[in-house]
Image (tube, rainbow over all chains, first blue to last red; front, side):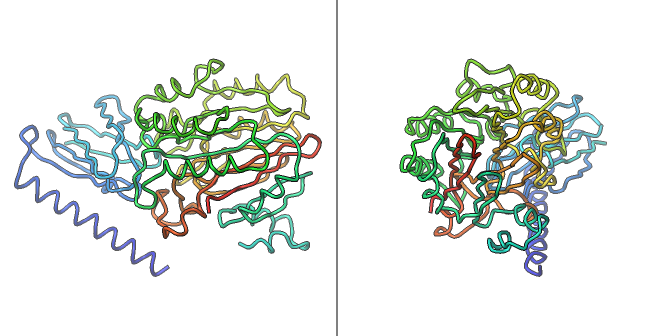
Length: 119
Length: 312
């Protein structure tokens, strides 16, 4: 049990570190097509963080850190985004230009659900 | 869980069922004449040799294209599974593959899988896993592995060796936060398919995702399975063979026996053990004991008996 908790803590720390490094990278090298960039990690069968709020025009980059493939599939038709299967290390990018609330899931593991709120 | 506990004469039905719920630790279960009998995986071939009747084999979750550290060569382990089949004391009449033939639905993966599986020299009946239908709703999969007799949704049935086989597809139409889905059209088709058959016909159902809730938080369940099972209840012998979870788990409910199969590529943890249903990391010398195939023997008047055989 102790081992499990330790592992979870480590994984959380790893996730946080990834997000911090992503922010740092986009800060130094802003993408030409998007005003801002946010990274969402796919790890341990979850989108991390699962809920993200950004401003219109933000580019979201999903990166798969699992050994399992995952997809990023929008549920809402307003902004249909659908990634190809993302193998380990693969990225998928989508620019959210219109305000709204976009829910998405992994079509291979449907219990994986995330939400992007664009303001 | 231990074998003795499940088999001790005094153990109650509840205890037996509790033990049957997780059989992923190395016990295979066979059913002959309605009496569950445990046998250690790998030692069942002698029993198979002694039996008569009609034999077929099940392989599952070959995941050709997987490159994870636990088994970067799933093509080699699939080949080893076929080698085991070639050494079975009774030559199987055919093979079923319960899905996830490929890892990423790529044509190159399907090509490699077809090349290896052709070597078995057996008639193979396929159904897709969710890894086989990524991005195209199974178009590529069905073009390669679909027969002429299939319904538009990919499901089908056939009769062989006195058994009625039903192949169901429950990996299309995934919706957020759900498990596998059969859909109303397939459930209606199943009712019609079974209606003219007598209750004494042995039924074997194959589907990728388990047709009972093994562990719903990881999607190890088929949401509308209960509706499909209603039309199976009147039959005296129903065997449901699933894949998806890369370990042997069994449940018996009335005349219906549910069994998931080992993968030929990589093991997965028991439901809820760990952060998710990904490949389970095991030492290289343990891997083959967690991969395998299943031989199924049907003896008229006796019943259906399964033997899980590991690659160890």
